[in-house]
Length: 199
Image 1 (cartoon, one colour):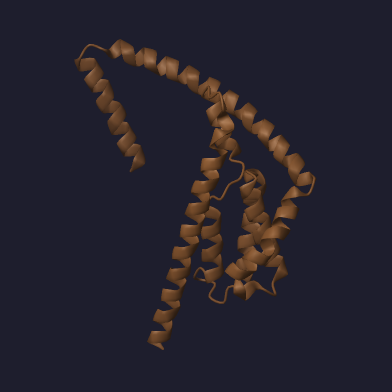
Image 2: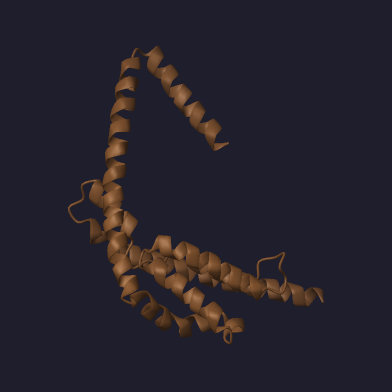
């Protein structure tokens, strides 16, 4: 569907340009945009590599594990059924810590391992358990302390203060994560009430 929409927009644009005698503008735009895209990609790759290196040092220094230990008591409240499952709570903590530090390449494999661990505690394997729903809400809330990719994009776009977004991003992602967890909690309570009513 998306491909169809894009093809329609491109085709419509070319037809309008041809009918108004501006077909040459399209050629110039395509060439200039392609050049800028390549320059932007290489510049962004450099910035991401720099931040990934810095954050990898932080991970090696044990900062990620330290943050994970801080979050573990809080996560025990969000996942009451996993209080005795230290392995699962540890993995969830590591995933949250990695995401907060912008370690996307580290967070992804840990997140997959966490999902596998949570699935092992799932009593209904064909359905997402409350723990899986809460974990996904927590991850997709996007709580971030260091949005390295966003900082890299702003720097490449010519921003004089690319890291100026740190405060607003933290506030917004904190609100988004809190709202997501609240609605997730309400949905789980409603689902629990519905099943009790059925029985």
